[in-house]
Length: 160
Image (cartoon, rainbow, N blue to C red):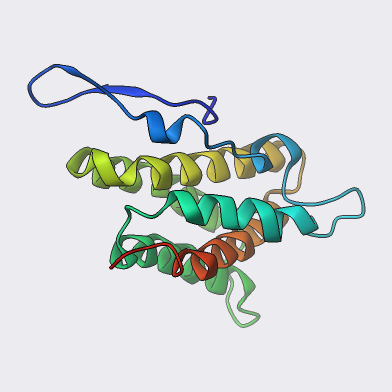
């Protein structure tokens, strides 16, 4: 799916609503990935791209943003826990389930959550792609770090 374009949605009264402010958002990581050729997180990802996404999350509440970030962070902690028997294959379905959770929340508040939904969908789709290449665990951990960076930048732009 292409998350780099704006979208239209039918409102409750079946008229078309256009979210033009979201047309300018481009998720570069969905094309370039999270890492450079050496396997390190890309500098632009952690600076320019993260801040650009944070700027576009201005309509999301901190509670909404933190809810999804905390879920990603909890899954990462479970995955990295040395004492746990859980591996990426057990955590992976829970990562995929985040898409349905954000879709549910989006259906309740389309005007505010479109960017967050598209960001999480693009991130999870990138994880799915890299899993096919045998790098799913690394992609998820990199996305979790990237998401944390976005959250850090977002507090400057969120108005609540």
